Length: 130
Image (cartoon, rainbow, N blue to C red):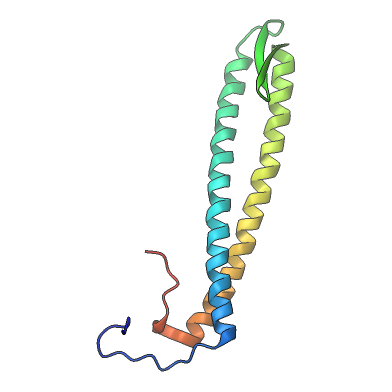
């Protein structure tokens, strides 16, 4: 069974090393997808927290509000809640930056693998997403 377009022949032999690079490419794509999903989740959580911080700042400073810690809610002053939100925002920023750096590293590895594989196989391999 031939998967190439009619009339086109595959003249390039796939070596064990080439197969390992193809497998690595696939593995990196899956890692990138997972990290991208995590990044989107963290970014939406950060947006939610930013909106929450704006709303809380409108309240009276001495007023007590419920703040979620884990699975529990505790009463804290607005000032304390704002401080806790800022700390959580900094933590999220760190996580977002870390994930972004990991994704950039994966992108550079993918670019190297893609250049090598396209260099060897040309049009006989498709590494692009549809």
